[in-house]
Image (cartoon, rainbow, N blue to C red; front, side, top):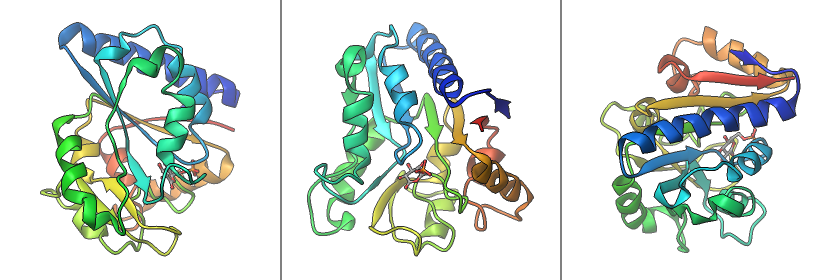
Length: 223
Ligand SMILES: O=C1O[C@H](COP(=O)(O)O)[C@@H](O)[C@H](O)[C@H]1O
């Protein structure tokens, strides 16, 4: 685990690492795909990354997961992305959509899966984690947990869980675990304790963040 002294150091330090990884990827191929989390943690990291001197026109940006709410909602991860990352230099990046208006995520699953699949595999993936050890929108006790963890899971699945107030769409374990560069971004003692609990857990069924831990993700933490 990389321990930063302050949350500011955490956000700028991770942004610098992601910038380095994206630079190396773009040296090797025409396009790079970056996946980032939503939620309450990553805002300052996304802001720091938006100023990185990268050839953003060659970068596709997607979320690791989305709450099934319109962008007008404060709970929209897409809204967070537009306000923090897709500004300044990074405004030239291509946003891979994770939401389309409909009654239920199942109604737009086919269309979204198509565009998301075209942008895979992930070159760089930054994941968040909840205190309940969920990552992306793969929650313990979720209705389609086993589907999302399966080796042959499709890239995207809808998810409903007791701890999630709205339905979700999430990237699945095979997509996350095969990202070329994989990071977990967390802060605070509660998350550090949850991570210890996940390390001790029997499997990703109990602690979905184990998908990333077992795949060798680098953990970035500050108090
Ligand atoms: O609901 C979500 O939760 C996780 C963790 O979010 P945080 O607010 O505890 O930082 C996040 O990684 C995920 O993208 C989001 O949809």
